[in-house]
Length: 368
Image 1 (cartoon, helix red, strand yellow):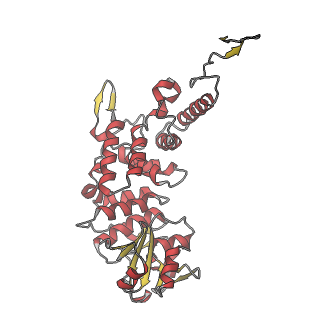
Image 2: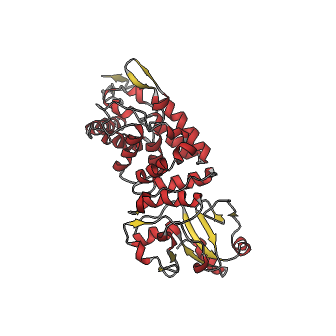
C-alpha cells in the first residue's frame, strides 16, 4: 500500500483510492503514473499530515502530495461529487483491499458503454479522453465532451500522460480531435490531420491517421516512447519538398516542435531530452544497414537507441512495408554491438592490426 495512505490513516483521515486508480485496480490494469484519492477530511487536517502538500488549482483535485497523488475532499464517499462517468465513482480501500460502491455503479462496471453525465467541460474532457484510452468502454451515442474555455497546461499534461499510458491512446486522441480540443489547445498536432502522404508508402491515410496507427504496435505503454510516437511526424506539416523528398528535414523540424510542445505543458527536462532524441533520429534506423560507423557515432551508442528501434518498428508496421526494415536494423545494431566488444575489430567489423612480442632478450613489439 502507498505509504501516503498509511500517513492519512495514522492522522485519522479516511482515504480511498478513487477515479482511474480504483478502476485500474478493479479491472486488473497496471496502475497509471498518476494516482487519485478521495479523503473524508478538511483541508487543514490534510495539511497537518503532509509537509509537501500543494494546492494545484485544477478541477479534479483539491490537493496534491508529491508529483503523482491527487486528492479530492468530501465529507463522505456518498456526498462526494459525481464523476462525469459512472464507472469513475468506484472506490477502493487499499488497507483492506476491498472495493466500495457508495453510488451504486457496480452494474455499469462490466458494461461495454458508458453515458456522459452533466459536469464541467474540463471534467468531461479530462475523463472522457482518458476513459476510452485506458478501458474497453465506448461513450453512448458517440457523445463528445464540451470544449473547456480554460484548460491549464498542468491539466493538459496530466490528461496526456494518462491517455498515452493507456492500452488504446488512439481512441482518446481521436475523441479530442473530434471535440475540437486538438485545434484549440495543441496547435503542434492540429496540422497533422489533412497533411497528405503518398498512398504508395502510407495507405493508412494522412499524418494524423498514421500517428494514431503507430500506437497499435507498441509492446508496452512506455511514456517516453508514446510521446515520441505522438510527436515524431509533427515536422511534416512544416517541412518543404526538396530534391524529391516531400518532407525534407521533417525529423529535425519535428524535434523543435516536440520540445516546444512538451515544454509548454510542463514535462520534466530529462523526458523532453529523451523524446527530442527519438524524434530527431527516428529516420536513422531505416538507413542503419548502409551507413558507415562514423556516420552513426553518438546515436547508435546512445543508451536510448533500443527505444529508437522500437519507435522505428511502430512507424514501419503502421505502413504497408511490414517488419523487414526493422529486422535489418536490428541485425545491423547487433553486429555493431558485437564488433565494439571485440578488441580485434573496429566498429565496422574490420580486423585491426595485432601486436606481437619478438622472442629473445630486449623483446620488441611489432605489427603483423
